[in-house]
Length: 77
Image (cartoon, rainbow, N blue to C red; front, side, top):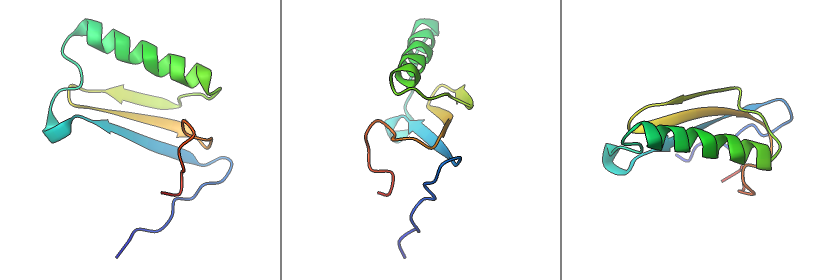
């Protein structure tokens, strides 16, 4: 059974997960971590949104963004 469409209304929070393929690492060292965080901040600035919460682990990252066009992607997919 397919999942239901996301609630996509002003004020809702989107939980974004970035995962390494086959649970592989997405960052290898402190430079990678700093680069990831810097790029995440730049993207938030570029799309004029805020990041409410985030965490970066070795093989995945979690981010909470408010409702907004997520990089121009269809949020109902």
